[in-house]
Amino acid sequence: MEKSALQIARAAYQPKLPKALLGPVVAKEGKPTQSVGDQEEIKALFPNTYGMPVIEFEAGEQKKLEPFNVGIILSGGQAPGGHNVISGLFDGVKSLNPANKLYGFILGPGGLVDHKYMEITPELMDEYRNTGGFDIIGSGRTKLEEVDQFEKGIQILRELGIKALVIIGGDDSNTNACVLAEYYAAKQYGVQVIGCPKTIDGDLKNEQIETSFGFDTACKTYSELIGNIQRDCNSARKYWHFIKLMGRSASHIALECALQCQPNICLISEEVEAKNMSLDDVVTYIAKAVAARAEEGNNFGTVLIPEGLIEFIPAIKKLIAQLNDILATPEAQNLGRSEQIDFVKTHISKENLDVFNSLPTSVARQLALDRDPHGNVQVSLIETEKLLSAMVAVKLEQWKKEGKYVGKFGTQHHFFGYEGRCAAPSNYDADYCYSLGYNASRLIANGKTGYMSVIRNTTAPAAEWIAGGVPITMMMNMEKRNGKMKPVIRKALVELDGAPFKFFASKRAEWAKQTAYVYPGPIQYWGPTEVCDQPTKTLQLEHQ
Ligand code: FBP
Image (cartoon, rainbow, N blue to C red; front, top):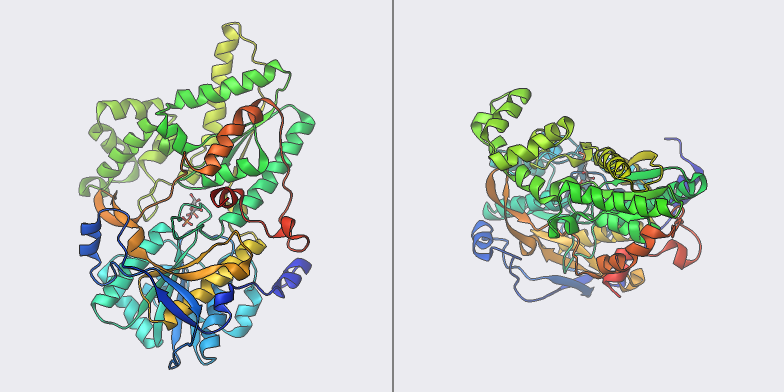
């Protein structure tokens, strides 16, 4: 594989580890834990993996172990740093015994079920250290939840002598990891399952998990691009740029990019829901800011839109919930795609039908069809940036007719998502991911299953980071998925009383009116620590 000069230099980077992981470790166990909600139901569903303690690693003597093999799966959307989780795990497993082997299952959880795998050799591993992407073994969104899949999995795990499986994924994939851990524990199959918190969306976080990996790099990449657009915008002074940002549900990415770039407007879906705003309220909010800037002679600006916005507008959220229930019925499942649309229209409530009919046809179709394997609406396919700018144009036109000055409204549209998911990891993600992987090897060596690998205190220098494990059941509650109540990891949305949102809210009126843009520039790998090694603004504000 031909490499750029940066890739060659970057390959030589040795990621940092927490001090506790530099030598042999022992696990310090805390008190028994409870799930975040629905304790009785979760306990009954996970009798073997419920209530386990949080653990923290300390320097100590590692028990002597027989050689063992480990399997790894990359699950769901790509996130910068995935290769470093694998290299951390690889180095950790080899440090326990050079004869240990690491196998990667190809193209996600499907590789386990279909017995598609490859050994990760030292040569192969060296090709991918500190690089972006998941291409070393590929990723996929197959949902692991059927006994048949677990049984097919155990066949290949036994064949390869695999003692533990590490699943790198978001909330849904880690939920599946926990279900698999419970199943193998109940059957006494002797295979441990460890999860690892990944997703650029930043919504797999809680008291124990500070951030999901990839969020740092993805936000810095988008912020570079937004900064470039803002410079262009402030140079030509003739366009309003509507920029949709990935992050399926939560608005963490949009908020972090706003904190980094200071755009004129940033919508936060969680606030739209809390204030019970309609689509028209959102449009009016943007149009007012456009008109206010026009009065000062500024016919340009930037609007950041979280990808999941549409799902948080309360009326649309209600509509989606009913569509999900209807689409999950056997009757609807047996219909073709266009018949399904007619079917849902005749089965939804009058209130929801009115909302459905008020949406542009393409958006309504998207909401009624196209779910991913976990039952989520594929919001990345909905062009909210175009929908909003078209509606703002109509509103401004209306105000103009009423005699209000609205200036000129030229628009450009952007969607930043795939641009950031495979970016080369920042120093933060390179170190964090390597530590998560290395730490997973220690959880395996200590016989743990049903745990997620966690690294905390990450706003401090890496040496002071805290390594350990959190039982996955601790993060669970019951939620409706595909029409049924299921145990799932609770998604972390933007907290409106949290420090990052409060800081943004205290500044946004000023940013809307003035042109207060910040241009963050590209990620730097070498140079002063304040340029190269800073965590996200979100983490800094949360931990100040
Ligand atoms: P994960 O939660 O699996 O990490 O994926 C998140 C994400 O990047 C979302 O931001 C986006 O909506 C979605 O994946 C896009 O999915 P796909 O890669 O299937 O197009």
